[in-house]
Length: 192
Image 1 (tube, rainbow, N blue to C red):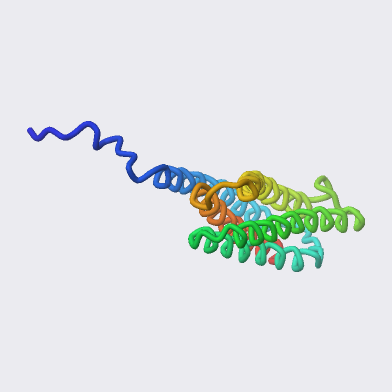
Image 2 (cartoon, rainbow, N blue to C red; image 1 turned 30 degrees about the vertical axis):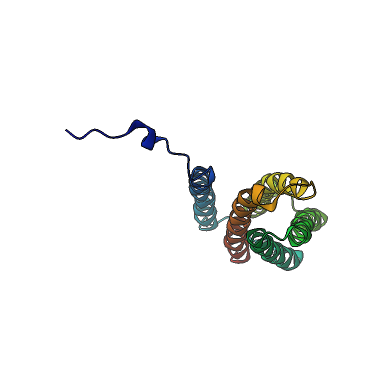
């Protein structure tokens, strides 16, 4: 029987990055399952004879552009962090966050457009799913903004970029994931 070294089991010489990345990977896998179930539920409900599609607010196209640009600026933030450029990190991180907040405000305004047209979550199944999917995505984006806020706050303090590089990398991965989820939801909502 071969004996191993106990210390090698809990080797943290690589730092917290592998554990944090693994944790985010598991979290995204769970979210994918949850979002996937909502997509399946939506498609199944669409097949019912009483399904009445709603006209999606045109504002969703503009909101989608905001989210795309937010993701682009998060990617720029990540590259600036890798290079150690704190000013670029601050600037790109700020723009990415403001664009994401603009997306959320735009989604709220899109809800207002539906309300003005007399559509509410209790109106019919299509409206209920619209509000449910956009709210679910918005809540997860607000969670991302919480992490973004922590990274942004730290970037404005006198600390080294290396200390927030992992947070920025994980936040960027989550940002891109939420953009992908939005593309799926947006396509689904337009397919009615």
